[in-house]
Length: 342
Ligand SMILES: *Cc1c(COP(=O)(O)O)cnc(C)c1O
Image (cartoon, rainbow, N blue to C red; front, side, top):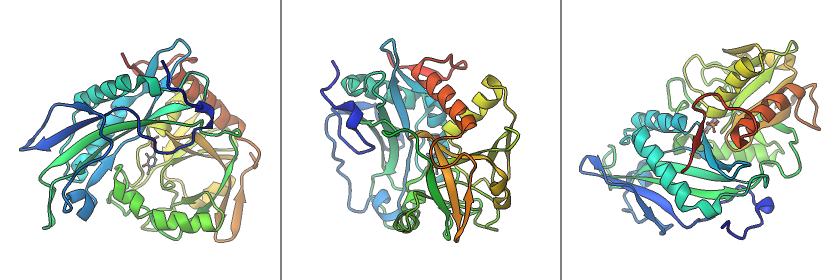
């Protein structure tokens, strides 16, 4: 039985569900995974996460398909990325096997919270690991907690997919060879102020350029770029110093473009100077799949894409429809992309 929720009016807001999964790292090993109904965590005031921001996270969704199954999309890539993130912040890794076990336990236990097919809503899953043990000298926390929680979230775009306006930021997101390529809370903490400034000025997001030269496009605070050229090529930026987060959505869209839709694709350095020549621009991430960008403001100079401010451009729309079709089970998925929760 599904919960009695007005699925259509949900937004992207925290809401505790019945269960979350937890495991503790103590004495050099992980405890068994457990389900708990307690939505609070109880940690030392000197926990590594509180003092030195030692925390990494992931984000993925569970979907209800037309035939009533519950599926997740390429969760092995989230598991792998969390291993990379954890390693970089000296946090104990959660194996792919343990991650998958936690995911199955969590979604199964919260089955009534998985929104029905066709509602537009999905179950957002948030895995994270943080330093829970006390530490004051700068070092990794002696104990950690792995936790996975979930919540139903609303349709990505209630009023259809409206293009957004973004600005080129005066701040940097990620230093060369820093932590830009991992999913760490610290990357978000330091983007909040720049984000607030952008919002005050009426922009939806910041576009970050490479920190070293401010001439190449990297990403926004939480989504990768994808561009369409005049001759229909799909381009996504690459960073010389590996400071772009490897988005599962973006990597999947590039495969969909090339192998399913037969488009030409390129992953390469993209100079900001080239952006004005593209015909479509989108932001990709789990939350919205693709958010179309209508305009980019660079210190008062505006780049307006020919796709306009009314709707997503035709090429991005094709990519969006194909990928969301794969996720919802109406388009055949490449081998291994869909994991059914049983
Ligand atoms: C999570 C995230 C993305 C999007 O990645 P997906 O795996 O597609 O959800 C892009 N950029 C940053 C900085 C992120 O943290």
